[in-house]
Length: 242
Image (cartoon, rainbow, N blue to C red; front, side):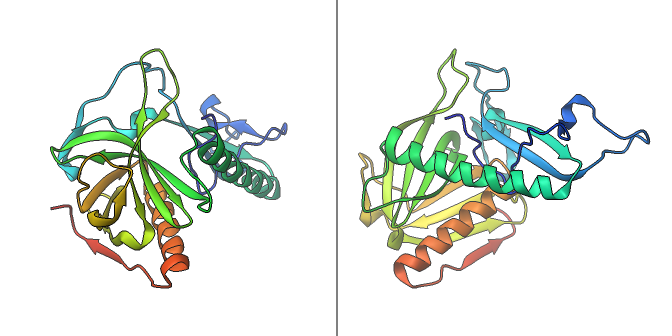
């Protein structure tokens, strides 16, 4: 996939008034100019093609593939605030349409009557403390846990096999942590899991690429769960992961 994975203020202006902050654009006083810092996030390797990270993350008590190593951040500023808002709106709309088409048509992970609502690209901690790349796809009535793969020589992260699917009625809890705002734990009912060859654990912990990614997927999950079950899903806040 070539579209941006996520960003609350993702925009990219093609006008002459926009320029990348990576190129050192600034005013004569040395201060950055313009409006609306914009961030474009894409699932690429940052030049580390074929190389997997194996760093430890204390907050999640694990090590392995870190989603941050597969994200590329680009910052831009524009001279006009209205132009920034226009491009932000346009790219957010494109982001939604592009990924909906990818997951529903190209990857064929979503089938009617379900329809795409959002997804998370993150590192999932398995039962042995190993971090593995995952796509968590949220649909109108179901959530899919899909393996993410990055082969040597490829610059993009592609979806792999479907690890499990869960009706939204089977999501029993959501927990976030003060010690690391990128962490997210989802509690599910293993008895109603589908599309799996192994027994699903009742708790899945994800290390997101950013706090914004975590907040966005929590909001999407809560919204879809309420629409499906007519029950509000409260978010538990803990000091740290146990």
